[in-house]
Image 1 (cartoon, rainbow over the protein chains, first blue to last red):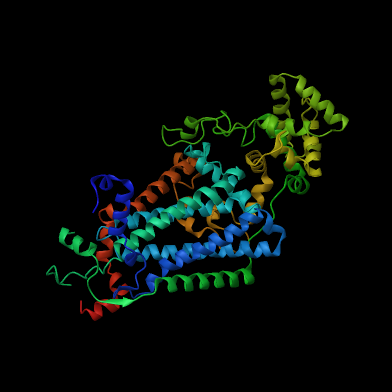
Image 2 (image 1 turned 135 degrees about the horizontal axis):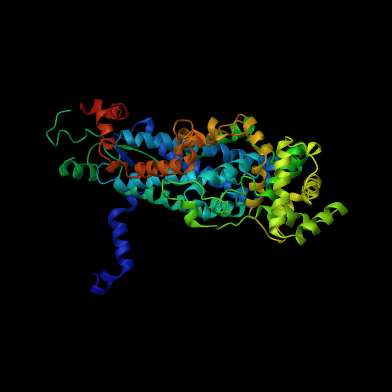
Length: 211
Length: 318
């Protein structure tokens, strides 16, 4: 029996809210609705898997330094894995996004699931962009020179200085991955909490509608 | 959309279910992606065109480097006339009456004369003509310095960047300063001097990048690599590698009128700012798309979902 004081406690409210909205059976279910049976559902988990490979290879590159891959064959291989995993990540994420659009996956009070997914997409573009800026090669020199004009044109360049290698490497390996990680975590928890959106016509019979 | 339908779609699924091993699926996906990435890495590697140093530039295109150094002294280079956030030489691009860069002010001051030429020259021991030129320059007032540099810049431009064809004139120490900087760059000591600016720790490459971009050599290299903005360069990569294909829409606007009209059109001259605003609005639109009438109805009108849930619809006879 909870006392009045316990009911007012933030910790108690958080625990009860968590238990209500995301019990462990929802977090780690061993069944899914029968309609979750299409190749399109693979792209969400493939995006997350690519992100895992990006983080693992990125951590290795972080410990060795930004220039390591220029003179080490192992470094070049790890950098290549990072590079190709990013390509996979965006391909899978774009297909996932289109799939969710055609499913109208925001239905049934899932608006925030869509919003966090779209934010993750936009944030990932920014993160990848800073990665291209810290390649310490000709490409990164040119991208920083060209991109400065875009950011300067709307005043953002006064704070976000693409030609500042120190700022870009910190954003790429610290700030932006944390932001993407948090948004992705919220997105996944929302998917688990709200469940996978049912087919558009699933409730036509209940609502007395014809297909 | 009826409230009743929304409630039904939001409620926990009460229909048929199937076994689904999330953890196994995730682990298998990570392993497959890692293997695929490793295979592509082994077969193709990743792009890594060598960075361009000032030594590379000064050695491969000495006339271009020399002329750019003179422009930095005369204040006629791209950086010298850029405006905010580097200086106050111009208002910069605008969004109609809004000059956002100017409003934000000079947050990264760049003095092309001293940062690019004079300060680096003072960090090395120079031959007599350069050392004397440096002393003369530093002992002169700004007006005199400007007159010398402008005179020489004009003459050098008329001579098509060929210093040997520049007629004698009132150039002061400018030719010797530019020659001294060229020698310094060819020796490989300018890169460090531009970065450090007299300090020990430094991680901001802004001054190096701006100086490099003021010359033609850097631009020519990017053109050769198909990286220019007007040829979809934003989403290209050096060599035959995929680039940032996800920037295709951003790059797209630079290929069409009025944004590709250059300085002849207000939108062309200020394309960077307008395209940034367009992309910001489109990004916001993507995030809040379920609220946008018309767009949010497309999945109901174009029934691709019938394909996605084909099995379910067949089994349920929907």
